[in-house]
Image 1 (spheres, rainbow, N blue to C red):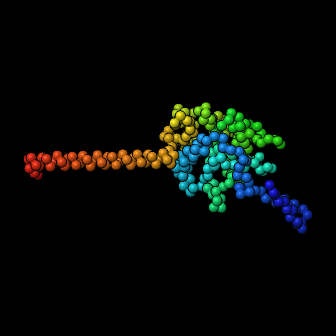
Image 2 (cartoon, rainbow, N blue to C red; image 1 turned 90 degrees about the horizontal axis):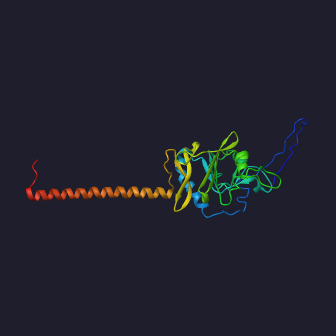
Length: 267
């Protein structure tokens, strides 16, 4: 990483000009640390979360000022190499920031350029879960643990750890700069109050998925699910129309039989 320091001369010996430091932005930082997505459920799980929450976020942000990161880096400090100062949640949401920067999608989310902390970060566990629960602070030889970074360095209000293989969800809420483990409500969900939603598990086709619900406990559907539901509603409406038309035709046929037998009905 390159930085430029320039001392500006001055005629006044009593005035000290501090060095000007050029810090990198999202176009100058690595997009990935080279690690692989750890299992095949992670990508579709991210899509499910994004697709189902977007109608809610569009209502919360009618101006469109929000962004969602999926396995994208959050740079929280300047280090060498740069990747040492980044964490990449599997999914996160940042309110009140532009969706694009200079007309382009972000390559990463750089805190020292944007200043707005993500509201929620979600990690999908593939291994033992130790990495996602690591509370170690940074040192000269090792990166800081994810849990420590989200809690102490960045201060993300909600942190979710999801272990599909164990059907386990842990949700932490930041209180006085410490994560407090939340308890589920009567539906087994966890309220994310600033978003007006709940998060929890739903079993589908033998697999557990992390899903959103509204505050009344209604499942938030993905785009595909909404399309299927809309088609079902349209089909039901069409069936009702067909049944009404059939009933009308049957009534007209009965009326015609009556007329044929008894003549026209007098007024």
